View 1 (tube, each protein chain N blue to C red):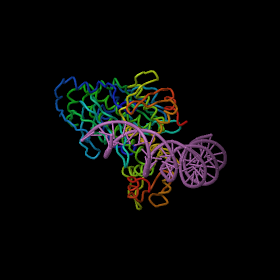
View 2: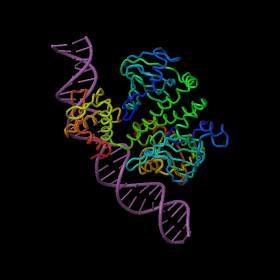
View 3: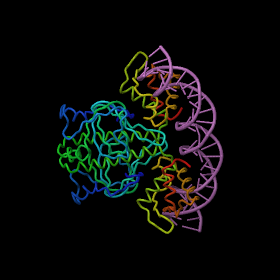
View 4: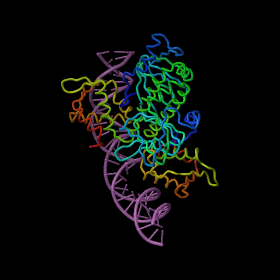
Length: 224
Length: 224
DNA sequence: TGAAAACTGTCGGCCAGCCGACGGACGGGC
DNA sequence: GCCCGTCCGTCGGCTGGCCGACAGTTTTCA
């Protein structure tokens, strides 16, 4: 969870546990391996759990009638709690440390140093949620997509002759789900921008951004 | 912050401080009086504060180009933190206790009993935010409004001959802002439902709900 | 108690973007 | 190589609901 709905600021939060009780299991945590596709949590089965991703990749999402909205991807080092009624699914084989909330609360009480870390994590999730709400209710799809791409540039972009090269391990469908829109809309927009020379494709798994400024303009203003 | 974006479950969270360090100022907190209309926080001026409402009524909201989205109303006993980039405005004269976050963190460290309370509050805010996201991206306006009204019935409804009487201190505009829609749409919907006998008005500050089941149906399904 | 200000109801125009559909491109197994 | 499953591009129709406008109503407060 970070700006623009995609994971990964080196939190340091998780590192606190991962390294401090170094190597072995932190007390009270249970290790679990998940095969790709496993559902770890659903809004129905409310078992309050806190967990810590050691490796792999999980997707946190909400589901409606005929659409899904991805809230974030979790990767190694991320921490999450099933307090909130979301689905959590392993999109790749993953291993994680789990603990149930009451036990975890006890940990918190006994080790006061952990508290601020936990607060920071919750705070980050909240800020992220608020950001999403803003996007959904104030910004139209082109603006959201532009921001999203800018975020990618900022986070993963590599300079190259004609601009920035961005690795793109997500498909159109996935991006749409992060932005609360549809495959088709995302696809059309990107191709339109390609025609306008703002971006260009380089195979399916990579994107070149030529004119970040253009994206920036699109991201703040409404439609043209 | 509670189901359906409107404040007030007897949290007990705030009571913890309000009563425990009874009467006087909890250590480190500064008392502040706000006149109606004062802006306590904006996304720009990021002074991290935690505060506690003693009396009055505040509105927490986001603002876009030409629309505002109310996240929640805070009333006596509520606690909030300006961690998240929102506006907070006194919609009535209010008095509250403030403390800045670092000092507050210290409090937390010294009094471990406070931690779970704080976690619960943050958790509640998060759950609420997720709920709003769900509404915004999956449910259409009629469904959102129906849920909202049901929430009111559940929380404030009083039985009467013809159904439930709900006090309504919010105007159409305010409701719209809570639901992420417009004055006009809310107004039309309510009046349409009135014509269908599902609800009826009783002056501006009160609403009668005759057929909660009808609302319930509307709240789960999409349009007719 | 009367004028001004703030709310409310309703209508029609308009458009972002959802949906279904379909054909083409890629990619991996065998 | 060939087949099949998945992903991508594009089109047209359709509609929820936003927006502006305006007339009526209630509230405020001088």
